[in-house]
Image (tube, rainbow, N blue to C red; front, top):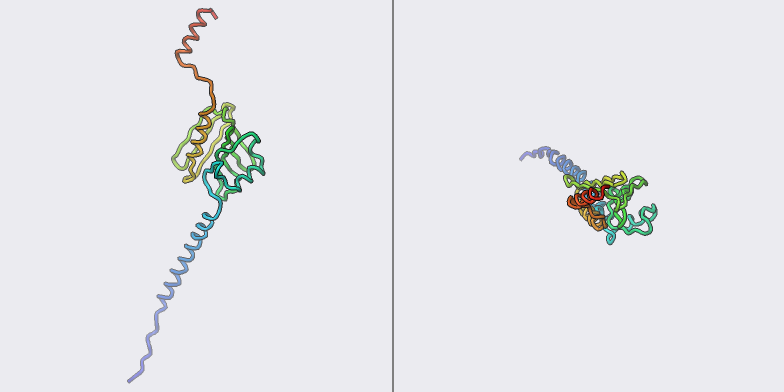
Length: 181
């Protein structure tokens, strides 16, 4: 009986296993790290006064963004890092857009008109009577319509003088004609 050595074993399965394992590690680790980061930090999206994260309250106080006589209604941190450096803030008296330590503010009773669009996320444009306009973009899945709804509720609650109807205007013109003025 003659002894025959075993044929050399192919290293292809080992190489395939290493490539697949390395590929999975390369793909899964960043995804896992992102999921961990996203689930352990503060909540993003629109927040209301009763559910504000402490980091945002601290930022508002530290930068003295709110006036002493106003109450926070809704808040949206537009940054990915959730550091409050760009935020849309709604109080019972004003709309404030804060970006890079600069504030654009509009009193609610100075709001002339607004429009919003839900094509991709929510885009809200607010126009003031004093030429102050505010543009806010809410990222998709951040509940931007809840901020818009809170804004609209506050604006509609403001007592605006009644707009004269066409009949009232005609009566006013007739009264002027009779008096000669």
